[in-house]
Image (cartoon, rainbow, N blue to C red):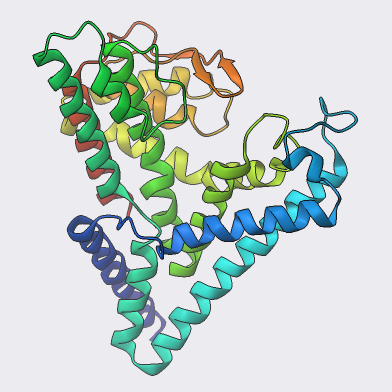
Length: 337
């Protein structure tokens, strides 16, 4: 009896995840104002204003300074923590109540609703679309014989947070591949992992956690203290998915024309070189699979960050490597789920 129930639960979860992946492949990630993730972002921004006012931290919000701004201000850390808890709790309860109510009304409605919740929490198709747009832009620059990748820079700026104004052709392709590698975790593997482990509501809760890290997890004056909890929570949420999915990427190296042995050598040697406890894992894996040199110093709003090189003996990236990275990400997503 227990075995039959377990088998039924596994089958149901597989159907829900498969439907979500089909929805993503067919509809992508709709760019509409009412998209649940965009609503989460607006809720987080609204909560930031309210908690900063409550804790009288509005000077930082306006770009000013506060005593001891080179360290962590515990009052502002508390403001950020309350914002994080409120948004994460709202996301979790909303998804949990919605799926429970749908399942109560009808089992089929429950399956559809759970699939929809997972669908809005993942974005592999959208990532592939943006990456391929970067590749086409670089190729247009090359066809026009431009000395610099003007269109490529504009396209890659849509998916990376760094300053792209000085990137050459190889730099644009490398930035795109790195974005695909990192986003293979937070855009697909991690939400799918939590959906399978705890249920569809956990995928949406993860999306809230990741969204707040994107908004608040910066090491500048405004967010050094306020974004501390958001950044640490995202590290925790990605810790296991990043490692499992990166190992899967290494095993899938032939899909992208790479070597499993070479992929694992790069992964094992460079996965912990990154400042982030998680970002280095997919970058090191993709660098090994594709035979590329990834990472290195990059310019951001807060200044130049001296990131380590992953697989430093690898070659420079070319446009075709973007397609190879996308193929690997899609296969990785399918297996991870």
